[in-house]
Length: 265
Image (tube, helix red, strand yellow):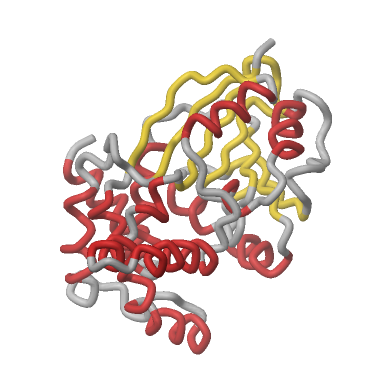
């Protein structure tokens, strides 16, 4: 993928989201551009539809989400042929209906994952792909705040900071790749490929973006847009902070993990 393509991917997220959220989504978008998704596709945890609307040049077949408010926003974006209000543990489709299931930074928010993995396996055709990404066990450990507090001898407070950040991020799971692979195996999947991404320095940029993103929250509530003036000059600093991580986001010490699995026949 050349520099121009990477610039386009990053811009379409930074220009429409708070930079810390757009930064991570852009990295994940980058990976999806190199993964063929055979239809019909189910997007598990479609949310407000923003990611699908900017990452793909065609509508995905079905978006499934349990929350009605973001689904109303997704309807306006037109990123899905069909939107369904429902839970991942009870997907309202027949056995083997889908060829691909995707889930982008969603599964970490679900407390009870075993029924979800079983349902995904059920609605996938034999040989169908399950493509998803999640934060891993390094996410709370590599936070700048936790590392700083630990460095000055406040280990307990540092651990509490990691738990606090997980709580505000609504993470029910930040598990190691081995645990995710075990879930896949138990549900009847064969792992095809996996990699870690988003190194600690990228996490620091995301972490500091939470307080710096407060103005975006205000513009969203007042004007209905995260970014009021999406211009290169207004986003020059976020661009500078994030663009360098787009070239090679894979990292052996990355705080997130990407998985491509196949349902066994």
